[in-house]
Image 1 (tube, helix red, strand yellow):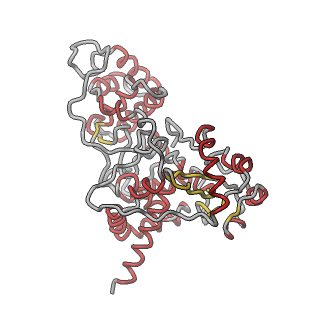
Image 2 (image 1 turned 45 degrees about the vertical axis):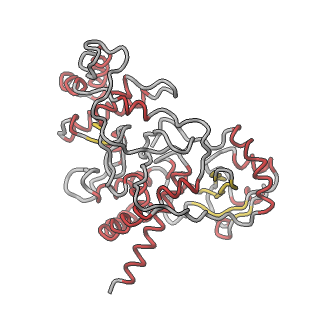
Image 3 (image 1 turned 30 degrees about the horizontal axis):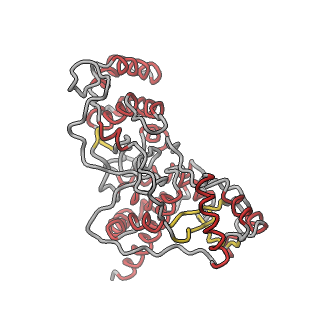
Length: 408
């Protein structure tokens, strides 16, 4: 959903470092295969990705994820704050007052109500810190990334969620054309089906990231100013006190971790109770995820990706990788460049993207992504995220079906 920082896995440096390895790979590989998940301990709960178009740091550099962390209770005062040097309040900040006035004007809100809300915001150092990029030098690894999400805790929670809401999942699939497994995959990767929705006050983090966005990465303060404006408008529309809403360190809310602007644009009242509640209504979350993906190009009945064997020619491979995750080649184009698609992929009528996922020092995983794979990356601009969503959803759907057939 229009992330602040797009994930680009096709940078020149990245591709150059891989061409030597790929030259050796293409001669030896047959059809690409999805790596089997490495053993995962079932006790720890993995961290969450930052979905729904706000991006944070990751354990895999360049793979954008979201961490749901413990509440930021104390906070630290930002540099340059007027008033008491130990204060974390924005009430004494002139720039906060200007921001509130600007939001009130743009969103047609009562100026005094808007200022009263912003004045209650508190600086959250941990939210600013979590926006910083991951340390340089850690190799991306699809197998490790997959093991964080396609693992026993999430699968078990997903099966329980599926069995409780199968009717609504299938209704969303029928209504919007998005498979139930994809919807389940998104909700599982994002929040473990509502188990981890975040403990930050959304008002605090959006104000912090609007007025005190951290140095050390590209400035996204304008994005968060817009989200703060949408958040306050959303609170006004729903009659909610802004300081009571909790979410992630980037301001994402509810089971699907929608940012405020996306709630206002894409969330739906799928349970028909007269209001939208992405935090307490799993049914609204199901419908909203499906609606979001459908609005971002999901094509009913199309797969998300096909297996592919890369071409042996390095220049042809570089040409296929150049558009990154954007579908830019027909099946015949890929064949002409020396890539070998699976049988089903050869008959695909849409455009395809050559998607490469690193596996540390091992050979990379390569797939041919369709428009549907690209649609998932509109939720989170990471191919690692998209493939994790797909594969978690497949495992949950398959396991739920297997348990249903065993139930007397």
